[in-house]
Image (cartoon, rainbow, N blue to C red; front, side, top):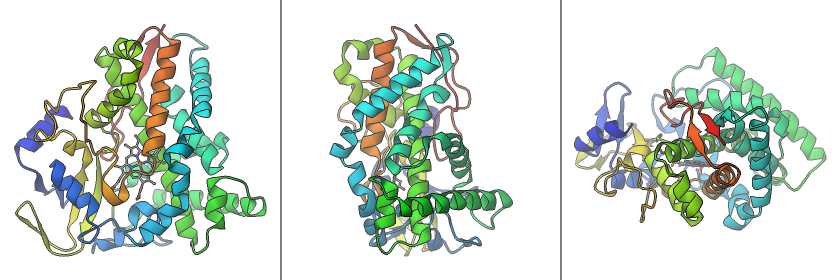
Length: 373
Ligand code: HEM
């Protein structure tokens, strides 16, 4: 999207998008302002006057991602402890072992494989499944749900049959799991959610869907985008010689090829942004990915500069809804890159990824064939 960003920024920080019927916000400062001002801009679906509540309710609508404070804060505090730096750090050995095992399996038949299937997809799923307490064996099911959820989000209006099937499937799955765990509580996130008072069924479901689906596809894309970019830029040797640079290199991947490109808000009062009048009820696309290429903040924004510092990107959002899983995503990506470097002397792309995106929302190749030796 590099050329696209350049053109967008040349034409201002925001514009009315005729096709989608919403405002699109690209400028770095505006993105931060809108993302964090819940008094003027809501994340709730029902803040949009055209929103039609589907029969049976919205499947993610009651998760923290789609609630404003104060309910947002209450929901976030239920699971916050699992994602704090110390808690996440303690998962390192498990993540390392998993990454190593996945790469052993991937190379059993030779030195060429699809990185997404072999590592980028299974690694985050296995880690979060363990943390939540859901059977990791069901990961293909989660993958189907993720793909569907990401392609369906952003749609509005009456729902179709696919959506209904998706909701029924996922609801039945979790109802069953919750019933079993109630009888046999453990030390996992599922048990914590069950033990928390005052959560209704949709709110409970909201945790699992957001964590299992939104948190995974994004981390998958970070790992894939990192390997894609480092191979393309011939940077693996730099990191092998300077492993302390892996952290900053990953921050630059997050900025340069942001896994989450955009998310939506709705204006809840008439207001102004950058001199333009915004009316209550207007939808706003907040383009984190474009803000990360704003030339007024990032020097040579469309270049990958491996040691870029400072790098105040907004790939994990900003403010109230700042990504809950940021520490975990960073750790998983770091372990993935380190494990690849430890095991292989060369890592090259077999071909350039084709159409590197599953939807407008998230950005990353759906497969990435690599050759290692
Ligand atoms: C929120 C990006 C990984 C869970 C967000 C937001 C962004 C984001 C941009 C803010 C959305 C908004 O303000 O509208 C990413 C990226 C990831 C990643 C780029 C990987 C590289 C994860 C992981 C998890 C996770 C691993 C959990 C397992 C969440 C949750 C929220 C969130 C629960 C909502 C937080 C809230 O509403 O307070 N993420 N995410 N994310 N993310 Fe992530």
